Image (cartoon, rainbow, N blue to C red; front, side, top):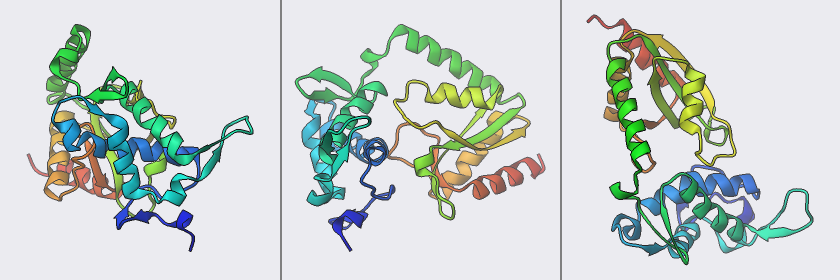
Length: 242
């Protein structure tokens, strides 16, 4: 078997199967490399760090030199780029456009702090908190979504479980707005319930107790689970005696 077909390097496995494509480079950068970079000692320290150095360490952890050197054709062009160059472009691009890292210039980045949050962001967060508090007493929908590259047929995969008192499609699109993703989210399920805030909290609690919570990604609503598992929890919660 060629190294190009191997999904592991130095004993480390990837959640996204290796493919010599630009789409793989994007998804590897967003869902595998960047979460690890955000948890690195350099980033967690809060001090400025050179993103390229940490990125290369993570890339080397998962991809062989042969894989990194794979040439990828540009769209509508005869030019080609090595996979390593494409990934090294995507990581800072995604980090900046999702506000997960603050660019300082000359390749230096740092984690955001409270001083980086604008008054508009704070006002929007406050309004969202009020809506979340109201959701505990209102009917609404619990929903689950993911992205096409992450979906698996017969195994757990990253799924975001959220709630809304309004339109599910609009809520999901709002959450993904400006998320620097080239994939549209896939809504995997929606369940109309009463007291939607309480139901969502119960689902999260069950999934956390089962060790399904994904701690290495931004946000607190991502879980390694399946639609069937979520459906069974929803059914149990809504049919339990009050």
